Length: 170
Image 1: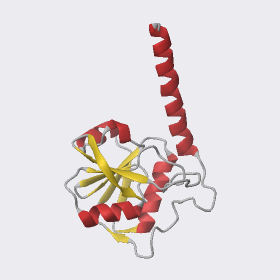
Image 2 (image 1 turned 180 degrees about the horizontal axis):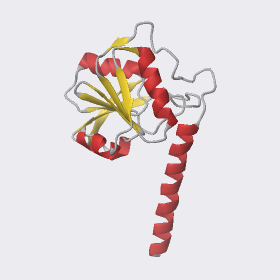
Image 3 (image 1 turned 90 degrees about the vertical axis):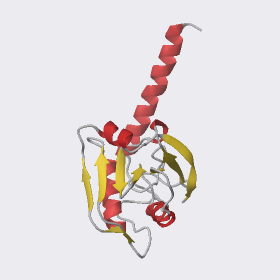
Image 4 (image 1 turned 135 degrees about the vertical axis):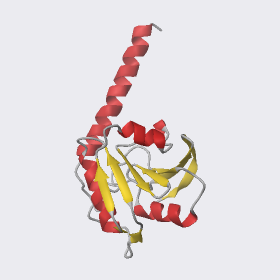
């Protein structure tokens, strides 16, 4: 195989991944199974203080997810666009393969992407020796994303910059 074909394939795949990510951020909620930013995850909000969310610039789904957290968590939820979001992810051990458009910090844990509040509740209740959890891939119908949920959300654990198994399905 010629090197230009490999480079072309790489660029095509990378361009497709970026397009899907942007489309996910711009999508609008629809369908009965969609988890929207204004939906309540449960009747009893999760009590967490000092929640900080770091957003990618210009991404509307980050704002939607922050709104979802504010509706489902009692306590302060702040969100901001940092100068270097990659440094935030790196400093908190988020593996590249699960990176999303925003990173949320809750105490000693990082929550990457559109993780549903029940998964966060499980994390805080079990208090495992990990850096955090992630919902890879910005799936349609996840909190703050448009689209319809078509299958359970698989939330992954991570520690020291590596995924370390499944936290659970939600």
